[in-house]
Length: 190
Image (cartoon, rainbow, N blue to C red):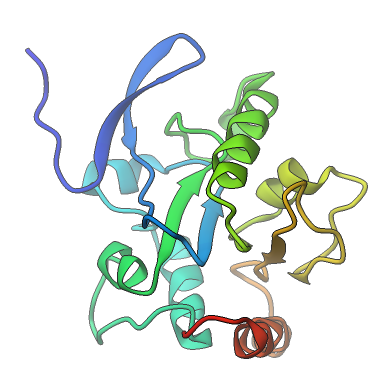
């Protein structure tokens, strides 16, 4: 019997196997897309992106920087992000706990799909929650530390890498300040 899906769950084929995962959440004309490594099992079970402690911390940082508005006490981010024309996706669509659970070839497989998907939409700003999406989009040699990356994607998008979830408050604040400045310069309302 097929299990009933809820929230943003979806069935997706990934490297020849179908999984219940989180489907992309994408406005028609995204002004930014938040890219993670992969959906966590906790988030997939909840049917919403970034439901674990680390994910909550990272997305609250994005709301505080002004990427989207999040009502107090809210634990889900999709409605607020969509209202701000911000989308969600991952490099690897198979749910795993983290990078250590990926199998050889998954990042390469996801890299081409991700670049094609975001390039077709002409996404102007890619916000990477962790380092792996930056490396996938820009290449390991072009990827820098947290903050706005010098290199751009093949279609010309700017790429911002968030600070680590456990970085010191001063470091995280400085990096997120770069995003605040960037959002103030971009030609769209925040």
